Length: 288
Image (cartoon, rainbow, N blue to C red; front, side, top):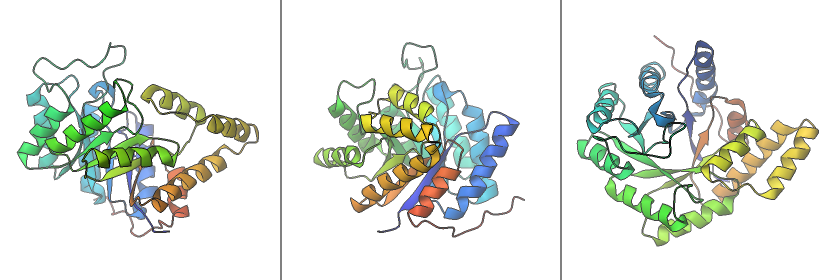
């Protein structure tokens, strides 16, 4: 089996304890030589400043290729492009451009009066700067706000046409879900790379709730498997085995890149990567 290229998603810390956890995560996973790492933005842009600070620190201190998430929620065009410019000034040349989730308690996404109407407008404006390579989100299962699965593919095509160069999918639980989506995208004329997003399951209750909220289908067999594993105190063993099996099937199906949603908890992701043949290659650069 061919060894995949890997990347990781982190989220910015909101407390001192969370800062230590993020740094431990980076120390654990950076020796695996990720192609890039991304830092999330938070629902409603709630971690905008934290993201900017975390991205700058990671870029300066670690030597990792850092991709910053950027959304257009609750911000004007000028404010959003100013943040993008700050990333560029810090030496960050890769962005993950997303419409973004609306603030909690709202009735859905409402564009800022002076903001971007959707992700395509954001991507186009970022591409026009000539400063960034741009990744976007993709949905192998119907997005909760989409009319149907075809609408998700049409949106992805528009985002690629607007200037994005790669897409990262929402997580899913079965390899065939990704393969069907990949084939449908190819049939629609999408030729940009589509990277599967992988969620190693640290906590089944939390992962299941997350899946329900974002439209990810939960197979009945998965519920049953975790119910039994939790009773037998083998949750982590099952989680590692399932994520490794999913990744193996994807690689056998021609996938070359995998993107892991780490939730700033690195152990399961590290163990899955090791099982796939991704072994430590580099040491984290000392912080000046």
